[in-house]
Image 1 (cartoon, rainbow, N blue to C red):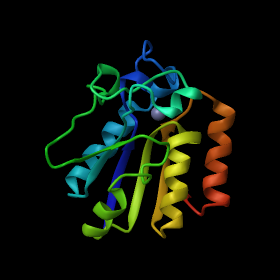
Image 2 (image 1 turned 135 degrees about the vertical axis):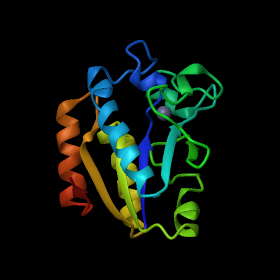
Image 3 (image 1 turned 90 degrees about the vertical axis):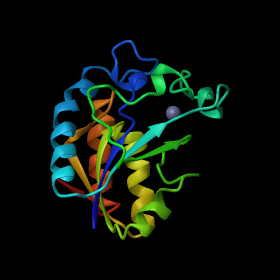
Image 4 (image 1 turned 60 degrees about the horizontal axis):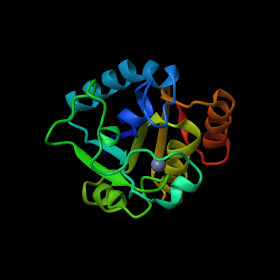
Length: 171
Ligand SMILES: [Zn+2]
């Protein structure tokens, strides 16, 4: 069984005025992600929204400006994307969607062995989620036109690393 992961498509990353905006690259993938969501819905494959959700004084803020603080508008999924009750929404506090979350359990309970990644940032949360998924022996595909980063060199490197070192399909 397949599932679609929509990673960190949240106001603080995608809005131009967001606390840690990815910039125009983030906006540019919205329509493709919408298409993927409808495609997976049509086939009745699960859609999993992965959402950065930090404590007020999260350790991560020693490296990055405060963003996606629990309960704030910045931590909400962008309104362009349609979240249904049947979708799974997972909050995370670190880069990987697997770290300290029930994602692995959810995938196993639903017999999902293949995940398709979309969202931001290619070289951070997408890459480290892909790495953990591969360590757990999931098949991983990354839609290259549905992931983005503020740093285009890092974006390209991450896709190469995902393909050559992690064995992801870049499609
Ligand atoms: Zn974060």
